[in-house]
Image 1 (tube, rainbow, N blue to C red):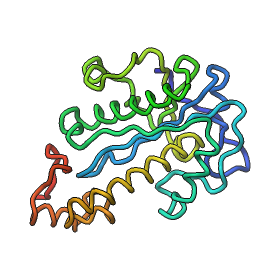
Image 2: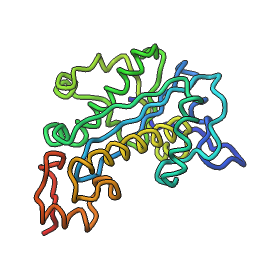
Image 3: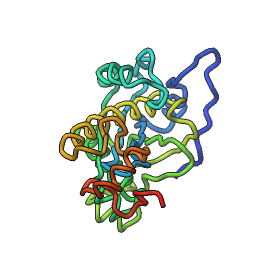
Image 4: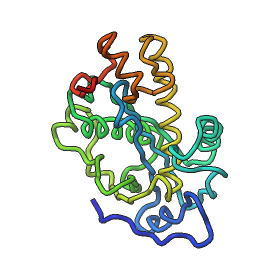
Length: 233
């Protein structure tokens, strides 16, 4: 992994821009912004979004921001704009049972590699790309065990770079956060219909008081992460 990216802010511009990605184009023809959703939930899958941009990519859609800074309605409106704007985009998933089996970081790795496999199948060349991750920790780089379990292509073909605050600074990462958040919220709404009583259409599987009370009353279901502390002592 290369050191944390530190491109200078663009003066006079608020919100995510392509300044960080353009700094990386000196070393890559493609930048893939990647972000995860569902890390801290008690139930449901984790979802990883991946959005590819190239030197000719236009400025990001108006209103794009980190998914956590947007309302659900604004995120939903942005999704088709992101798909039209990006060079390519993909989602990767890991199930609640995989979170239990691999641990949360291993599950995120598996989901991230599945997203990259979708991009590769769509023609995104791994050796020409840099994957930009939010934060200081490269959670994508897999160990041999998780790589074998996820049955993914060789890690060495993809380069990674980290950037603290990338989900609010780098447009590709912000876009990845939005598409992943919308996709996972939709999945949790579907699961709420299959497993009523936990309020997943509202809490998205996170540990709200209502959700924990429902677990105490109904017990955990197969979509819960059984290795996690589901009910407060």
